[in-house]
Length: 158
Image (cartoon, rainbow, N blue to C red; front, side):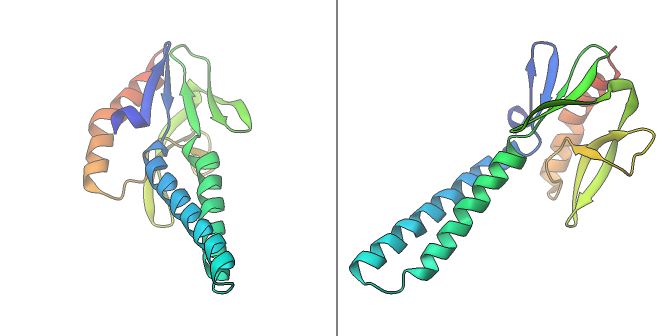
């Protein structure tokens, strides 16, 4: 799991916090495709009962694709030198803050805890997720023992 969450690119640390959910999104996508195939089969062979698999399959494939593109592929670049931290999404790469201006904060969304980097002057404002959802003790322990110290060292490096 550690390899899924972060890797080195040159001297920069690249954190991909939601990459561990890519298997689940692929599973939802393929289940949706199977339901779409079932809907196609039912519409040809039976002529009825094809609406529900079509709706469920369409919803599953579209939602899994959107989640994969917007959340799973989001990457945070933390450079080794004192330059700007940047975020890479499907819309491109943009710089957000200087390394000296950020701190690591705990956040929650839908009652699920995660770690994020936020600006020191406004830690309750905009933040960028750097950990997966810390809902299980195993994931929380792995993140706090192995991954969080590397991120802190990279943020403290000049």
